[in-house]
Length: 54
Image 1: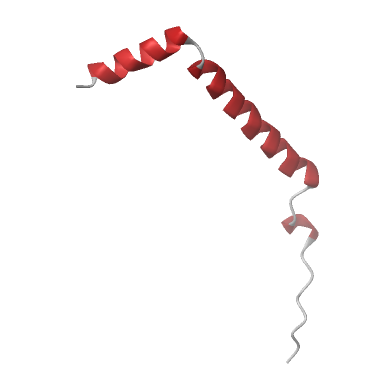
Image 2: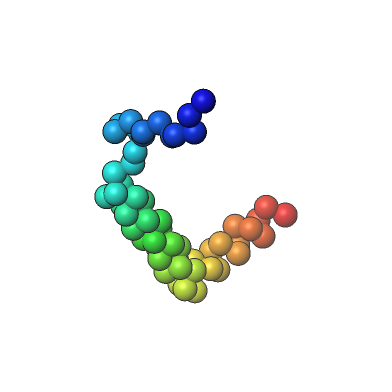
């Protein structure tokens, strides 16, 4: 019995640009969330909405 791995099908591998694109998208989303949290008005609105739940 052979222990060689089967070659990966060409369509099964993710293109390199797709991995980079997902990383850039995640970074952009993180920066957008950070920008919102640095706005005092947004923080007050978020606190008011949280307080309204109780």
